[in-house]
Amino acid sequence: MKRVLVCDDDENISEIVALVLTDADWEVYTIPDCNNMIEKIESINPSVIFMDHKIPDEGGIVATRIIKNDPNYCDIPVIYFTANDDIDALAEKAGADYILQKPFNIKQLEETVSKAFKSYQANLTEED
Figure 1 (cartoon, rainbow, N blue to C red):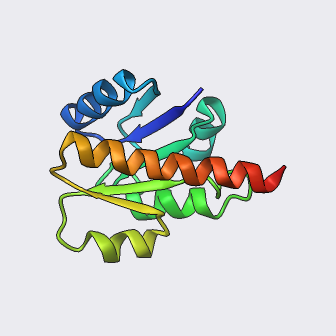
Figure 2: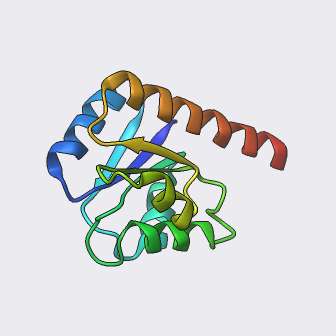
């Protein structure tokens, strides 16, 4: 099953992502903060993670670094998404794999998650 974890405190964004991706046969989980990221990832086991830059608590940069520094979860693609103009620099600083500039359209959302999932599948194949 394709699972996505959406980390964003904006309920409207989370709902839009959930609606679009559920229609595309994704199992979608949303969280409004980045407390206990590793525990949340362990329980959900996502194939892709969307990370908001301004998510409460540690923020997107720290939360993404926590994921990318964990040997069990570092291969899960992280899509960094924000309305900030410097999204490229922020995503690079965080160690994210992909970016999605807010506001985004449905096609951009679907294309980005599709690319991320393909890289996740490729990583799984390499590990076998």
